[in-house]
Figure 1: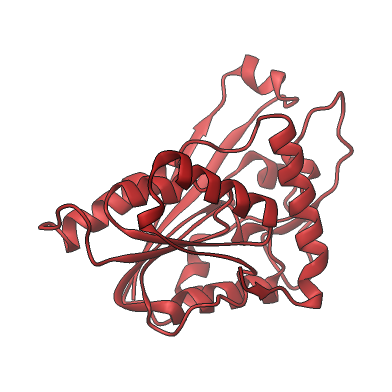
Figure 2: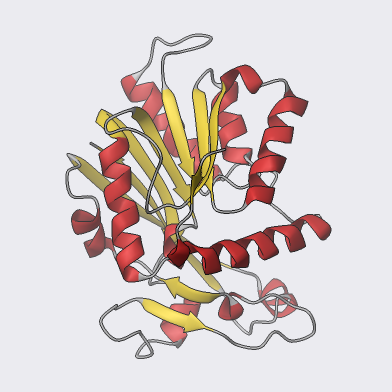
Length: 256
């Protein structure tokens, strides 16, 4: 694994490494692909590569690949996959999962690195995926991460992102507490109670608005965000420590 972690990223690496180890200890890390990611990749393949069969000449990357459930699904569809993650533990588990599933022939590179400095050449990838990663980056890093996405995509390549929206009940309850100079960004530092992990305790979180994407994905010919929302049943919201919980996420589909 190549090292692309700078001094500024060390604190974030330590945070996510600890988080991932805690998830492993609790057997609580993601093991299934994100439904929205699967659905939108399927739309892209059907529209742009309808005649593929078996192994195809496509190369995808996931930024913040974690244990690799999204990458495994993509690999099962005959696509070479690559991952970047700031947690070495996550990368090791991802590699083990590919070995257990017999899919190492479809695994390209797993890189220890940051979303702000992707170790891939300009225009070298057919697809880039992201799920709930960019929303935890400070403004400068967040903007740079999107620039990196556009840089590494081939013309006609696809970006599929999955990130939190301003319609979320947490943001709606805390409007007016945005960071100066960064609308949509909150610092969520509520003390956990009774061992429950709340969204309100995860630190920096950016809730995206639809209008942002045109600037963040400058250089793409198609930018099509789709907002998905749902409300948890009252008993489930209470079980998680909330009086009311409305999930709101963007699924961003963009073509360079």
